[in-house]
Image 1 (cartoon, rainbow over the protein chains, first blue to last red):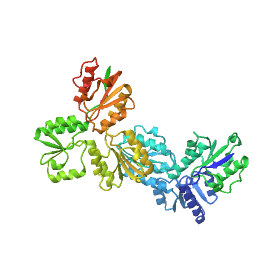
Image 2: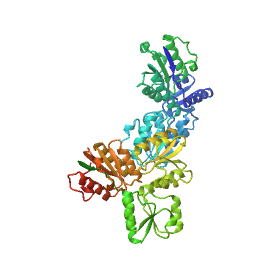
Image 3: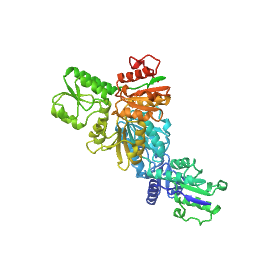
Image 4: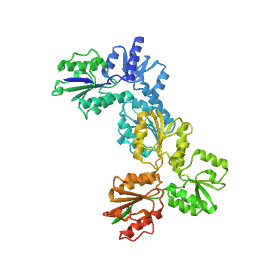
Length: 291
Length: 291
């Protein structure tokens, strides 16, 4: 049996940065709060809890602790409330999300009806929506939802972790109805690269494991994109692996979402090697063959 | 043999308006000049010459005659020169082209690199280009020409008579390279409707005649779009019809570009009826069966 890792998998720039900011702040404070999970990976969130980085659901639960804004960003309203509370704010919003927030504001200020391609309940999308203050942004998770709500002057933006193909389909649909369409391509390069390499890998293997939080939008998208090409399992940790999945399989692929830490990727690879492989186990991600 | 006219064919709003403006001005002046042909139909241009509407190639040839700006528009430079000359200006630019000119100027002023989907030597495109004064607009006649010249902040606009499918393809290509893309859908509804009905008709007939100036961009596009579905002939007048084209053909379609006058459509229909048909000849376009 051969096991390959997708060429680009795991932590992206924004997630790496957010975890680094959180870890650093834990050395300076006894307890720090994050509004919601700092990234969409339960194992990383649990690790950070041990260091005093505690997720809370509302500002009321924070007390006077410093507050870390998570990678997905928060609403403009939360920024205002944090300022009023006078607590220390540590902003770990992904810089690409920060840029998208500014673009939503710019489009809204200039009189465009803003459309957001994303999942309506995703924290990044909720954050983006809040920056359209003049007229409510319209969220759609699939181009087919764009029906009769298109305005002649519209703008469209994407959740950073959505797929480019769906975004293009939406643009083509919008342009039929709009005389003026402002498009911000906010799909993160890391997302696009992970998607492309995952699909390439899926085409070459019999089975592919997509590792990442079950609540991670970009991980779910990787699993969705690979499933037409190979038997696909979305797992959070190596513990979920089942031996019978591998019966009759020769080539195994591994990919991981942008919020999946290296140690879980390594543990998954090592468990398969332990069961079926003839190569040495990996000490770190760099030891895993890529495809 | 059955002969059908496309549901929407012939003079569009802008062309009708330009011819009306020219005809009206001929009643007020002994001679009026147009800078280039007022519309892309040699027969109409010849008719207007008889009324004292004389096309010229440069401002020097105008003397002190009033000058009609033709339906395709002129460059911003020509507007300035006309003002300096102090001659009477009669603006017959299609209102949709006027709007496109303003949009090019707006995009250029706001720092976008302007791309124009169109034919580089078409007067409308030359006119549009002139309104990008800060940085030269880039013209492309096919999406494949969009190579390495794309800027992160770009705008794209179309010659009013190009096809929506090609425009969408270009947008999808541009959005891969642009973080911000401003799209003006300047494709004229009349153009799009003529294209759609011509293709629908071509699918139903054995042979289709596309009537219009050989120099008419929108007519050439109709012929291009219909040719995969039916044997297609682009003619300017009924005189070009050849009897042997119709051998073995049962259903004949007729469509016409936006600058083709009704009398040429009627003459073409009547010639076919004369040769092969069993219906009465048409007195005007409304007598021709549509499909």
